[in-house]
Amino acid sequence: MKEREDERPRVLVVDDEKNLRESLAAYLESEDIAAFAAGSGEAARELLERERVDAVVVDLRMPGMSGLDFLSWLKDEGPAVPAVMISAHGDVADAVEAMKRGASDYLTKPFSPDELVVRLRKALSDAKLAAAVGAAKRASEPAVRGEAGSLWIGSGPGMEELKRLSERVAPTNSTVLVTGESGTGKEVVARMIHRMSRRADGPFVPINLGGIPENLLESELFGYEKGAFTGAEGRKVGLFELATGGTLFLDEVGDMPLPLQVKLLRVLQEKRIMRLGGTRQLPIDARIVAATNKDLEAAVKAGSFREDLFYRLNVIRLRIPPLRDRPEDIPALATLFASRFAAEMGKQVRGIAPEAIETLSRYRFPGNVRELENAVERAVILSDGEYLRPVDFSFAGEAMRENVPQRADPRPETAPAPIVGADGPLDLREIEKRAIEAALERNEGHRERTAAELGITRRTLLNKMNEYELR
Ligand SMILES: Nc1ncnc2c1ncn2[C@@H]1O[C@H](COP(=O)(O)OP(=O)(O)OP(=O)(O)O)[C@@H](O)[C@H]1O
Ligand SMILES: [Mg+2]
Image (cartoon, rainbow, N blue to C red; front, side):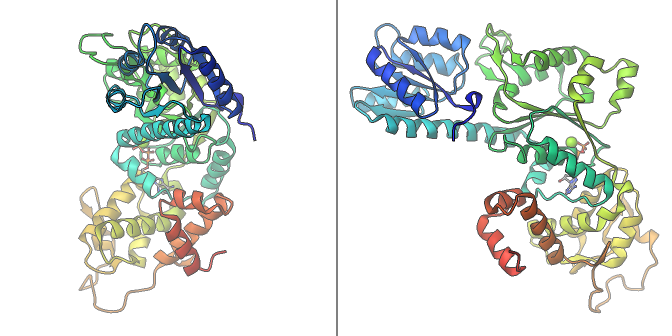
């Protein structure tokens, strides 16, 4: 099956031998790779000012700018793309020098063109992976946790509607605005949309737009060229570029300073960016998901948020209800968190006692799911039994035991009460089983994807499916 024209990888071949570069370019095209050719390092440099490419193949010996000089230029000032060096002389010293100057691979002539294609595809996927790893490292700690245990719980009508809408918009390239109070799971939803999109193999790049000084934010988003300002010693690739082929998550978008709102709007309209101090416009290929806990309509009225930017972002709106409006999710969420923390900390906690579930369900959770998660984490740390009890929970430093009738001994040595949830008995195994079932359904039975979504290995998934007798 042919990939869509704009999704083909784009590769530049730089070689002074006309026949070789033209036949290589033709071969790449036959392999569904968009090929560009340049007869010299200088010509290649010019071409890179105009065109976006994903990788470069470069000959070592060329008159004028040598392949090695070109590599140095690429490393310091060119686009951050992998380069495969080719040479007629199987000289180890050259290969080492090429690697030092940033080449990702080295081939000796004569080579078969499909050998080159294999190496190119590897270089391309490594580069993508490196971008994704970089993005994951930048993600805040709770975000990473959300990714690892990417189970999403939501059962009331509001959450069902949210799930349906997410599934519908995920495969499109539409801009999505996720709104909800602090801690309601906006980032989880953003990641879910990314995972369900056609860009799932591309990077998910989060950036928090609140609380970062304006000039820093600008260089993070757009990148800069060497010497763009005092202290810009190298070139920096911005997050818009890093998110190529993936999703850029603009978190806390309501907290952006006005001048930056103008710049962001322009980028979203033109779908191009220019690095600070740069001269060329780079096309962007990132899906935008934005999130805020602010009332943006009110901010627009108050003049602190640009109306035009609001309309740009508000193409599809996903509203996450606060946890107090969906108490039916509390047992499942609490049990999920308990199992996750117990596993992380190597504790013997097996579930949550019914009295505790009941007290939790009555609490209003101003900090929403995040507050519940933190409370369960503390409870798991404090608990030395198999079931979390009301005494193990406290909110804002206030122990919950004040809210519940106390027994003489808060931890009687009787058998634990059965675990009850919203609809009958509920234990960790049941939760796990249901979660796996739901994930399988979401991924149409695709095992790899289901395992990836659940953050477990394929083997573990198969074992669990056996255990729970799932198809
Ligand atoms: N529906 C859900 N199912 C499972 N876990 C959830 C769900 N919603 C939120 N969480 C968990 O709650 C925590 C908070 O979620 P998240 O960081 O996405 O919230 P947020 O709305 O972005 O919060 P903030 O406004 O504070 O940035 C995360 O650890 C996340 O994993
Ligand atoms: Mg958030």
